Image (cartoon, rainbow, N blue to C red; front, side):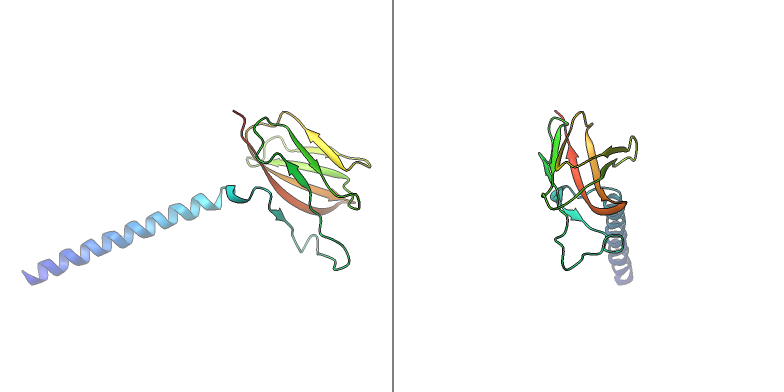
Length: 138
């Protein structure tokens, strides 16, 4: 009788551990393919592609509103920073858009569809920074 109770307790613990491990795997897979909604304007700089030079200020663009409720956003950057073109990459990688710029310090984009976008800023073929944008039209 005592061994039966011990077997039930061990079985119950094994089920709990297996359930916990399975839920953690599901959370890991969900996080792996989703964007972090808590920090839409985080500046993602790849130090291998774009090492920070101590003498220059890191590139940072203002993207607003973020999140956008209309599909229209405005991007601007400081006067001492140059951008040749911007690439908008939707989270599903469909309809990647490249916007060529010439001597401008801001750009407005209309008609963005719902979803998340990675916005990549380039100058002279070098990646300056990548920022996230969320569009959620009502």
